Image (tube, rainbow, N blue to C red):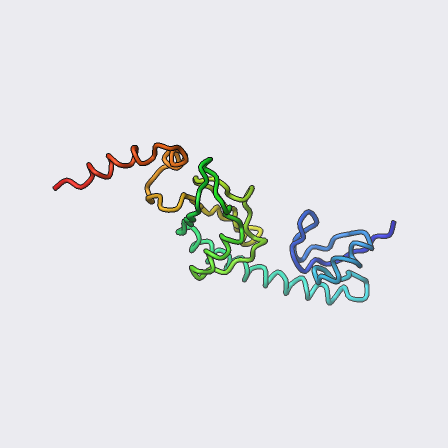
Length: 183
C-alpha cells in the first residue's frame, strides 16, 4: 500500500487543515486531492516551495478568518423567516432547504456557499430552527430560522400553527380579531 505526503491547500474534512502536510494513500492523492487542487505533492525537490506555500497559506488563512468574523457579525443580527403553505396535517407543501437559506442571505447581500450551511434536515413543519453556518474553521455561527404557515401573524406561536390544521381555526381566531379593535 503506497502512501505519499501532500501539503493541503484547503481544509479537507477528516484529513487536515490548510497548510498541513499529511500522509495519504497514493490513489487518494492522485485521483482526488491533486485533481481537485486541494493539495500538492510534498516531495524532497519542492520542500522550499512548500515552505513558501505554507507561509502564503497562513497569511491567506489570517485574512479569511478576519473576513469570516466580519460576515459573522452581520449574520448575528439576522433572523430568517420563511412562509410556506401548510397541509391539514400541519406539514409544509414545500420544505425549507439549505438552498432557500442561501437565496435569502443573498437577497440580504450576504453570499455564502451552500456547503457552508448545515441543517439537520429540511424544515417541513412550522417552528423555530437553527442553521449552522461554518464561515471558517474557527468561525461558526448559529443562524435562527423561523418557518411559518402562509398568512400567519409574525408573533404567532407554534401551537397556533398546529391548530391551524384543524377545522376550528376560524372560531378560535374570530373572537380575538373582533375584540382587538376597541373604539
